[in-house]
Image (cartoon, rainbow, N blue to C red; front, side, top):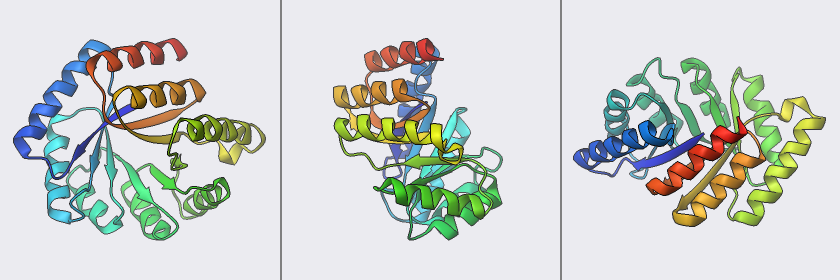
Length: 212
């Protein structure tokens, strides 16, 4: 799955225009399948407002990215029933995010740099009732992407409890397209990018169809 990001600092008119462009790409290429709403304001009102706006226009998957579970809860009320993926759970807030994900029946992405810590967070979320878990190894570059995706795939073969989709976050341009392609080929991945041009969306759409 490919997601493109919209910041909650974006003007509403610009957000609507952006969504219109993304919907056309979906019709033409099948990509992106998701929109990630990012809490760049670190405040509740802009995030909640942007989530509500996008929820009324975008029919695909929603991802809510914030480090504050209370802000996530306020935004979730505005998109009840949509079951967005929650991105932002770490060792510092895993209890609160797990409760929020369980209450709203949402998938939860847990983030940590070390695989051992990632497995611990996944186990903790599962013990608190979260049924759908994604893993964000916080990969910084292509080398890490190749190594970590391979390690997680091998780990899941030995430990069924480690078999979760991987969240890959990247930027824009050709580098983002390459990271997305590697992640798709490595296994079940959700790739969140800042931006991709139309040619990249077309290429990734064809790639995803070929591996399904």
